[in-house]
Length: 215
Image (tube, rainbow, N blue to C red; front, side, top):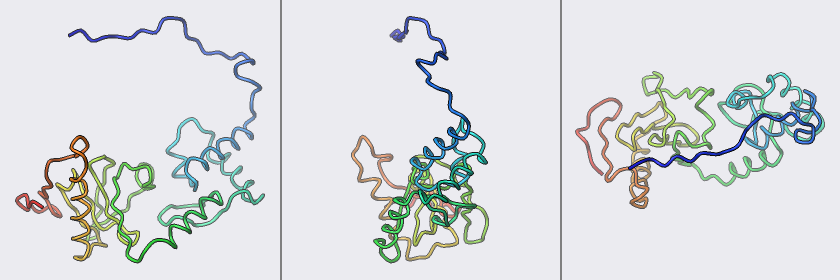
């Protein structure tokens, strides 16, 4: 079977015409627009989030604009998210949302989240800083098959390959075992076309072979 190749005819070129590009924007205005873009994208802006982006002006220029916006009362400055270093700037609606989530969160909240989920702020240029019970660093990889179990906002368990390999952290307690199994089982309840695996098998627990204990 021959692979069909779609070709786009015509000539392509970069235009610099005023009618297309408009009036040139000075660096101060660019920094303001880029600062607003980061605020709209993340809600809370820190240097670590800036480092995820490409093609932006130096952080110093954007930082100066964020400070001006904070001085004018347009945004807020403070320490909103635990684990992020440096100064944090946030939209007022983002702060209100965080406070609402905190007030609505029950005691001992449990969150099971994929390590590649955009909602997870750590990873990439932000250090995971997840340690085992022996206080050794746990190497975490962003992948659709890897997950973290958070209890009370702390990472208690790191799961790889849809539960095939489990690593417990310094925050893990025996009471977290059943919630972990329930969350892993939830992956098996997905529609057949989306189900990652046919059955749940835990092969390694903290590096020890469990002879494929099935649940």
